[in-house]
Amino acid sequence: MVFYSGLPVSWLPIFYLCSVDFQLSALSFALPGPARSFSQPVTDMKIEYSKHIEARLKLREIPRELPKEIFEEASERYLDTETDHLVAVMSRQLYDRIREVMVAYVIDEDRATLLTIHPLQNGQKSSRIHSGRWRKLE
Image (cartoon, rainbow, N blue to C red; front, top):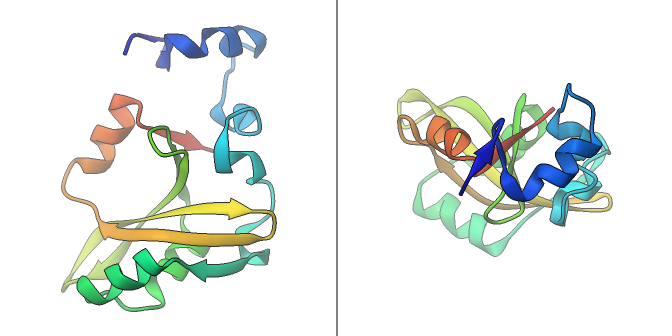
């Protein structure tokens, strides 16, 4: 994919409609998918776990409350441009050490559905950001 100033070329028309101080948060309502409804504070939402995240919690022996904690407390949030899911990332104690853990989710009005959770490998977050797959939400 070709990039111009960190944006895919396909975003150029949107980029030129915005100010020079372009921020993804200003576009979050123009993007397709779940990012459109990301205006409500996450603590005011009803939180549901998908069947997939329930299975992953058991398989990976992750505490059941951890996805909800990450969703509510994470200061790093991204739009995954491949899936159109939102992603919350936070460092947490897991498997006897501090590691970054991601939770993918979608928002539908006042309900957040947490889709999956997994610890990130070293460099995985920076790789996804650098490749453009994850776009920071502010």
